[in-house]
Amino acid sequence: MSDRSLTRRQFLRYAAALAALSAGSRLTGCASSVARADGPVERESRAILDEGLNWVTKQSAERVCSRIARAGFNVFIPCVWHGRGTIWPSKLAPWDSHNVRAQGFDPLGNLLQTAGRYGIEVYPWFTVSLRQREFFQDFYDSGTPAQRFDVHLQSFREFMSSLIFEVAAAYPVHGINLDFVSAGGISDSPRWVEDYRRKTGRNLLLDRQVRRIPGWDMKELIAWQAAAVTDLVRRVSLSCRRAKPDIVVSMSGDPVHPLLRLEGHDSAKWADDGLIDVLYNMHYEPAPDFAAMKTIQSAMKRPEAMVVGVGNYEEATATSPVRSREPERVADLIRDARTLQQGNGVCVYLYSMLNDAQIDVLQTGVFAKPARPRWVKADASADPNGVGRSR
Image (cartoon, rainbow, N blue to C red; front, side, top):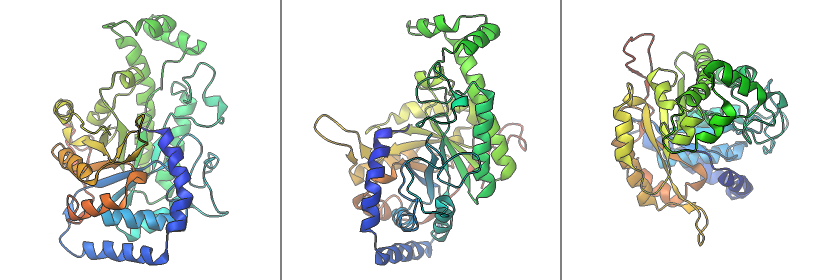
């Protein structure tokens, strides 16, 4: 899941990255990616996520695409909505409050043009319910979980699906990625206390407290939360596929995390039901429990939907700041993630932690063979058994 402290660090590094860029390095990176593409090409989606503002100028977009292409990635997932505004000229919302932009310049449009030259697919990333700015005040109140929009409001669900549709319809994107797909907590707004009582016959304020009792059955509360969040996912999925029938709808999450489940997150079911094509099960720890994730995957109707998202950084400790993970360990994690993937590739978080040493190891090791993206999409309408199809 998202790490806001990392995002701030990325923002501070953004100016330094631009200063270090030179025209010579841009040309070298582009030539390298073209040369690698001349040989045999495999079919594997290799995605990397960027939660920062590392790509919002012409120069930085060139540098990002050059570096990830050199490493061997072919899918770039940049965060275009982090609950602060947009990184594209929107008719529905203001610019991101952290974005340094030039008048008349479209960062997302430029990124798509640049990525196309490198053979990279772009999947704009939306932190759906996250709110990091005091705006759109009709979409939350004092009872809404902190730093969140209220997913129980139909007006918010309509707004968010329209906002994502705006990108899917206006830009030549290959997919969209959803994150923070949950309520973020349990509301205590009077309107939802009454709504919960009417739909379940239970007391929301009481259930907020008794949920902490070990073993207490919270199925009514979970179902009530999930109904709202699922409606939002359905709206986004249908609108994006209406804009582009072949679009890939992916999601970052953890399908069994108990707190996320309590907040209405049900990503495994959404994958099984065909609302999302790809489920990035995000685990950045040094030694993810791949056996446990295999068990989750085996229980899914569409096991091919699950991709394990691994991390390329080490968390901060009392004696060490956040730092890039050892390159060989990153390569090992990708190899382990490949043992679970059934057609939807691999995924790494986070671009700002991708250093030159990792690039060198990836391009000569796990990503040595060039690859074009491959997806196994949900296609429930064409197949009553929900079996996916490749793109």
